[in-house]
Each structure stands twice: as structure tokens, then as C-alpha cells.
Image (cartoon, rainbow, N blue to C red):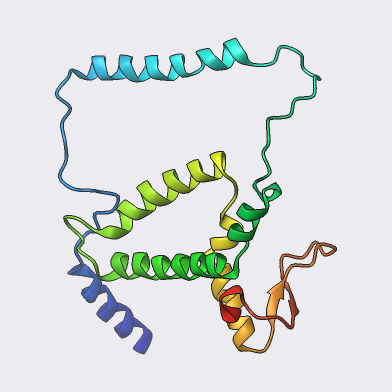
Length: 184
């Protein structure tokens, strides 16, 4: 009987809830051109984006292809700057700070109007990090905020994480060194 009463009370509480309006950056916008013109333009953009692929793709199936690479660590001064504990520790601290700002802005920020969270995630994160990874290199292994927090928690518990290349397990192996920012 108490379950039925609790279920009824919970149902009455939920009955007054307002609907969630997700995935919106603001008021609706009607395009100033006819729908057919918009659809033809979108189709033309998709078709024309495949023209360079058709013109410049390899014709042989089994021909080996390697894209050009440039190792930034070959330059001694650049390697010294890019691997410095101050830079890597600062990037890791910045990634965790931005992650916390985005989560807090998403939870308590404005739900209508400008909110930092969706703009940062959709514009800076998805587009910016993807382009950076394509043109410079994979920065995610260094700035992954979940990994950074895990490393810091492991260091606070007395050990930092170190991946074990011989293991197929996703669980990291613990060793006795601190996170990058701790020794700066």
C-alpha cells in the first residue's frame, strides 16, 4: 500500500513538470529563400564535395600510400618546449578547469539566451580539436580531463597511472611517479 501511495505522490509531482526544450541555441529561424532552393543547394554542396575525391583519389587498389609527416620533436628547441612539464601541466590544468566550467555552465547557466556550455562544446571543442588533431597532432591523450583527474587521484592516493602496453586491459597500471604538474 505504501508503494502505491508513493507512486501516486510521485506521479502528482511529475504532472506539474514543464517539458525540456533541448538542443536549441535560441529562437527559431525561417530561411529567407524557398525550401526547394535550399534543398537543391544542400544537395549540390554534397555532390560537389565529392568531386575532388573522385579526381584525386588513388586508382590502384593495393598501391601503398603514406601521407607526408613532419616530426616536431626532431627540432631540439621545439622538443624542449613541447615536452616541458610547465606546458604539459598547464594544458592539463586548463583542460580540467574548462571541463568544470562547461559542466557548471550547463547545470546552472542560462537555459535561454547565451550559455557558454553549448557554444564551447559545439564550436571550440568538436570543430577546434578536430581541426587541431588533423593538422597538428592528437592532443586528446594529453588533455583528456577524465584521464587527468584519474592521474591526479592516483597520485594523491600514492601512485600515478602508467599504461601497460603489454596488457589488453583498459585499466591502467599504477606506478610510483607524480603527475606532470606536481614537479614544476
